[in-house]
Amino acid sequence: NAQRLGSPPLIGRFPLSRTNRKVTGSSRKRGCSVAEGRGEMSFKLPALCVVLVLLCFATPSDGQKKKEVTLLSEKLTQMMDWASKRAVIRMNGEKFRRLVRAPPRNYSVVIMFTALQPQRQCAVCRQADDEYQILANSWRYSSAFTNRVFFALVDFDEGSDVFQMLNMNSAPTFIHFPPKGKPKRADTYELQVRGFAAEQLARWVADRTDVHIRVIRPPNYAGPLMLGFLLAFIGCLAYLRRNNLEFIYNKNVWAFSALCFVLIMTSGQMWNHIRGPPYAHKNPSTGQVSYIHGSSQAQFVAETHIVLLFNAAVTLGMVLLHEAATSDMEIGKRKIMCMAGVGLVVLFFSWLLSIFRAKYHGYPYSFLFS
Image (cartoon, rainbow, N blue to C red):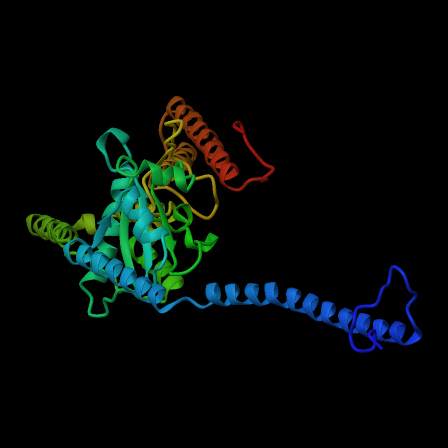
């Protein structure tokens, strides 16, 4: 009776009854269910904490958003202030990392990496800088000017750490830094193929940023003045020889004029006028100057002059051969003219063929020079 009223059983002295065994079994079952519940709760609590942490990091707070907006506004204000003073913003390592590499940024930056100091002796850099300034000023003073794109410049002597950061060892180089992400391969301007004319740079900028810039060049009066002097000279010459204008009907004069025009056009002068390539290329690491471009898709101005001279020499050789065969001069002079003509044709045609082989890799034929 005492045991049924709640007194503790004497487990050490008396065996448990069947009723007590049943009660004990049910209590064990309740204990297991309680333990299982606690295990589930202990499993759900860390998972809930992880979810809360992810939500906190995935959704920026209002303070972070305001901070980003404020920082972006400060960057835009700084860039617009510099652009209002100079169309091309000069940058060093600190400005490049803060305004170009570090987020947030919603504007594009086109940067010319160059070496303009006199001790660098980079003539191409100065020529490219002139065209780059024309492009930047055309954008700065256009009616469509916005803060979507800025033009900047990093000189090697002012930002050598930027060159090391980007693993660059040549100049000039044009790179577009988009508002989001890293620059792609197409964001690096192909200077050797397109040249550095402001019009070509404007087309590349339009491809990368959808910003179309109408290039406006400053007035150049050298061309009209030269044309005026030429016309004046021709007019004066015609006036002085108004009683003897037989030279106008001289076929040799017209043949020479037509030949000069053909040589100028076949040497690539028109391509130079359209593309604006550099005169030559100097390797900054070795100091070696290249006058012949190694690709068939581009050329240097010096290469055009070399080809023009070689073509003129071959033409002169052909003229000498023709005169040696048709003239009434002494046989000795005709032999000399023939040998000189053959020598000019063979020598300079061999050099032309070697230039062609250097530009079109894999061309199998050569003559005298490989």
